[in-house]
Image (cartoon, rainbow, N blue to C red):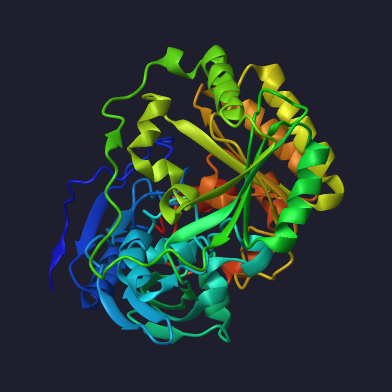
Amino acid sequence: MSVTARSQREHLSWGRTPRLRPARVVRPAWTSDVPAALAAAAASGQRVLAYGQGRSYGDACLNEGGTLVDTQNLDRFLYFDPESGVLRAESGVTLAQILALVVPHGWFLPVTPGTKYVTLGGAVANDVHGKNHHAAGTFGRFVTRLALARSTGEVLELTPDDDLFRATVAGLGLTGLILWVEIRLHPIASDQIEGRSTKFSTLAEFFALSEAASARSPYVVSWIDTLRPEGRGLLMEGDHAPDGGLPEPGVSPPAARLAVPVDAPGWALSRPTVRAFNAAYYGRQRAKAVETRGHYEPFFYPLDAVRDWNRGYGRRGFFQYQFVVPFADGDAAVREILGRLAASGEGSFLAVLKTFGDVPSPGLMSFPRPGVTLALDLPNRGERTVRLLRGCDEIVRQSGGAVYPAKDACMTPESFRTFFPQWEAFAEHLDPAFSSSFWRRVTGEAASRH
């Protein structure tokens, strides 16, 4: 068995807040090493959690005082059929690695979040969604089977018919360590995306445009100016182009050429800076609507073009906040939250507004549900920002919505129980040795079993 107990990586979340450190990090070299590593951690009394690329924004990927099992070395492809589009890979493989392998053969991810630098295991553990939720649902719908290592020494192969499978999808890594995942890919004819970008100036206009776009395009997303409570922004829709060619096998898109080498100063995150950025971003498109066509990278992963972009929020990090509310209350809830942001003096450079469809999610704790969802990035200004976000939580609770655990760093136990009333049924499937800083925060579970 080869397991390293030290890691050169900084095991933080992508939001870099809160800064919680594990007591120990182990890095299995092979999936066969995992059961012994889990058993050793369990025997020591420390809580265990898997850690992939750390792209969760809050503390869902953190385990303060416990053991993190770093899956970076579990990055092997086990099976790929270019004819059927079925792929099996270890949990530490990233979506970027999958795309590099499958796109030249005419396949694409069936669902992808806004970054390709998440692991396959993390995509399952958070049941990630993308710009095509209204058409395809969540990532977990395309998982055909997976292998799960438990602290008891068991390695279980699970399918969508198993209760433990449904708990593991969106299970936040708490049911055990995912060893490998098998998924069904989506066929494509080229690496190009063609579509349309349309300006809107009110929330009412957004809802009308979004409904029309969702009826004709599989991918729909909007950027919104958070400093304009009336709701101006840009709605972008697209689909895989029927022509344009595919890259040669082994040819990947170029790596990010830009980077944020140091933590940005506080003045870079001021309200005037956000206002100027938002005005420029909205104004860069002069026409009401323009046709678009280009490589899939900037359409799906615009921020991946800048390495370490999270450092742009400064040394204290930032809060990512994403909520969903039912359509019946969507306009009022989004409008009230945008109003609170404007009144607080805060603004978000990277605010994403879109709708979720009614395709059922396979995970017991999956976040998406029919309605409108808004995602925000806010610099961490301490208690002031926490109060603002907890006030937004109250609006979401009253509207019958929910906040995304993968992006949360401050929801209260009361809010969590309201957002996810099924949490106690889910807890019955937890591995007794697994926990996270997020889970302990929202449930009050003790950090140690001793």
